[in-house]
Length: 407
Image 1 (tube, rainbow, N blue to C red):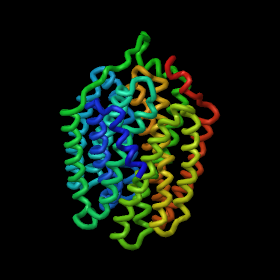
Image 2 (cartoon, rainbow, N blue to C red):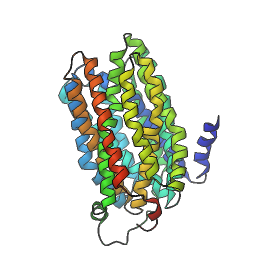
Image 3 (cartoon, helix red, strand yellow):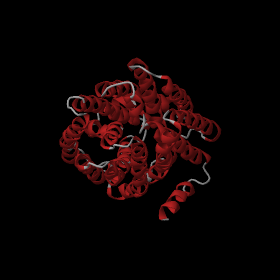
Image 4 (cartoon, one colour):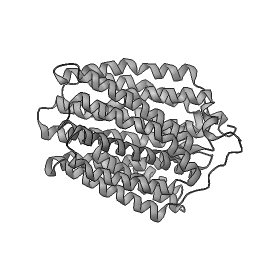
């Protein structure tokens, strides 16, 4: 298959760079671990909590990263990426192993806070290191090829997670994730080195400089608003599939496959969109991806058979694959120096939107009976809301690629 050749090219770019290969392997392990947990964590929560409590868990656990991610980013700019990645992946391993022993709202709240805090540091430090390797040229192209490591790991783990849950129980997924996070930390320790960073000659700090950039602030607001609806592509979708299905065993398999199919759609989109954005700019691709949000959300409300969710998941290639790679390239254009701080602000906006979206989705879903009606109405609301970030970015944000070397 052609995709196979693209995967090989991901290594070919930096075949002599041990750090790039190690970073690729670490991305694979981390996202394989997350792929075991994310689709089924809502089911573990549902065994002890109601929809409103689940919404609160996700909202509160995502507030902590809002406050910490900029700090994580600043720390990576000052002390390097490597040690932070090792520390947080070990932390994620411990939290993953503890999840099966939680049984109350407080237990899940504490673990949720720790889980998202550690993961938020990972998704700030590893992209920053990937961009350090890229330097200032063809950032979209190289980052897209690095990021497919996570997609491939996610595809494999989500594809088998439903069968593992059905055969061995949901707790097994969390133990497997703990092993993969620990393996990721070992890979970083052995193979990954910090790279030279582009130093700022600006006397103002990176944070101060970035928050004075009006284009970057519009971008952050877009990210915040987009993630209000995007959070419903994950935990609430698992709950939705469970309510659509009548056979728990079948629902187990479909939940895993739904996330696996979505990740399969990411791979070619990440490969092509990164290189394409280097040629035509970031803004057209970001707008195109945002326009698919309301379509995907609305299609969820039309299905009555959980199997029909699977073809809808192919749109994830646009709503995540294209969107994530091009928005990261957008950040890199604005902040050739201080990338860790910029990515921290980006992830803070993302987590803030996810936290707000979790609360809104939980309240709407829990306000109707039966629960399926609540989930349908929640997706209808998110469909309408998701048009707002499209309009904001299309009419106010400015293209960054032409200024990539002068920011």
